[in-house]
Length: 445
Ligand SMILES: [Zn+2]
Figure 1 (cartoon, helix red, strand yellow):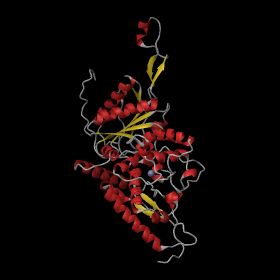
Figure 2 (tube, helix red, strand yellow):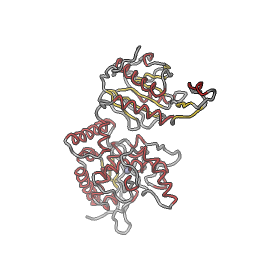
Figure 3 (tube, helix red, strand yellow):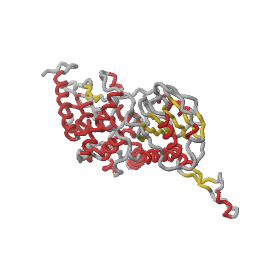
Figure 4 (cartoon, helix red, strand yellow):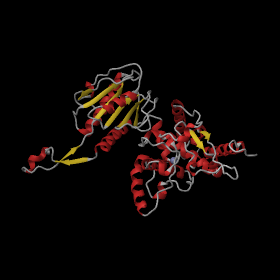
């Protein structure tokens, strides 16, 4: 096998053989992720060659075998040849974690104007992008550790950093900020500056242009995720071991929750408190019991209630009576958190948003629309409203395109039936298509 400079066919064969072996290793370690591991599309990049020997040299910027959201795995030949098979396999499982859990869509990272996205990690990438990558790694890596898979050196591990396990990337960000600050004062660093690629933050890298191939489209990705979730559930029913992070993901991805009322309530309440901050002590409104204190007015606890908009998919694929019952549920929950008879904004949407309706009760909302569905238009119109809403609740069967990135408002999606899909950046409660009438009688209506 001779080298002729740029071509180096021998190396490419060797690289492909290592990738194939790593795939088998990964599928064997976590059989419930096998279909995902085999869906990864390796794209072999141009090697950097040693001037003297003509052999590919490993580029540390590619040590994570960075992926993009179309499931392309970017393989830098020098790195592939220098990395043990087991470690390449470990990175494959790790990248599947980023992809399946929607880290790119959940990412808070936005492109920085005027700055060319570099393929390199570290200095060129912004601080926020780096932190998000670490937090997303923490979310995935504890599940890999639960499978007794050793982390490669320098990667983030919640256990090694003394952080709680089984948290989400969003929860790890502030914890890592605190830790990094403390360690930075001591001259240390949390972990190596590893760049996992656009699969982690949705920002395209320069190397993705060169022959990235097609990869998977949205529909393929959705089908693949469902089949991975089904594999995990099969393994759970067969009493096989599955790390808790993967177990939770598969449960949320597949079936409507038995406790969907509880879940929906928890999500809306969490949305309300995340957004509004907590309970605010204020003298603005005297307590009703003020009279009892003989003229001394105690501070009343005023809940700062976030402005909520409900977006309703009226494209016709969901029956009106189902929507009406769900709306009653949702407004019931909001009343419970915020107090009754608050004004609520509702926005019906099919392919485009209809005029906003300001109502006090769910039954006052007029369901208008029909035809196709595009919830991108609905979410966009809701977040563009003034005053700007803090919380957007979407009722839909999920047979719709979604905005690619996290909108400015917190979004809770009430996903009706067991089809459809919701984007990774949203909080999702699956609700059965045959919503039963609310069991509790509530006096009048
Ligand atoms: Zn990663």
